[in-house]
Image (cartoon, rainbow, N blue to C red):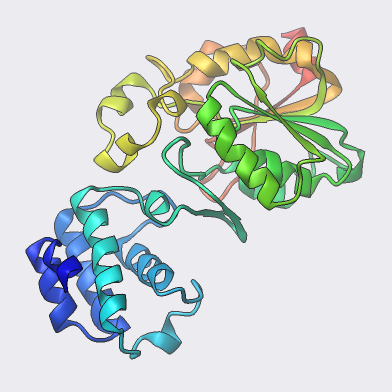
Length: 308
């Protein structure tokens, strides 16, 4: 009971009043809604996030809420769930940082506040090995994940392209430490090399069949409006300058020297399509279809970059 006593009053009372998973789910949704939490780090609404946190805290399968709704919690379990929900509400910490995990489809990655929470549309495209733009997944050799962060896209690229040797580059030593843990968890240390590099600065002489990147792209106005949850993430991994394109410009400028003949550049840019097309009016961007439309990820071949 000492642990519950340290909780905010409404959460301490819940440890006495709530018995079942169903009770805690209803309570959590109410608290999240009342607190006007911001979502987007793996879930998009109060119900889904509440279910995820409760199931995680109880060490239950994350895809099987229904069988457990009327299960009663022990006193220790009630304290554990209450503490987790209270921190989500009072500190507005993204759920992924509380649980130390993030999911891209069926793939789990370790995360902490040294990296942004993975949520890239490029992950969707890698599920199909970038078909039809990559006609033969087995033919992809060297590949690069630029601004790798947690290493998630480097890992997904290695899984999608079985013969590829993948490099993951990032300017942040902390991010690379997280990436090393994820690469080890997937048993891919023999196929993924992690490199500390400021965009292409430390990659001189290296060329790739494929470069993917989910770089910082939040523009200055949007950075000022970020909900508190997003302010727990490293600013270095989010802020893209006045128009969100500071790092993207450097990637486009440097990519021709690092792409092999016929090589592909695939970059996620958030909501900056219009600004990008204004900045590069002669580049023939191909906009790739994702679950949120064709506004967020572009593809360019090396030859188009060289000829522009």
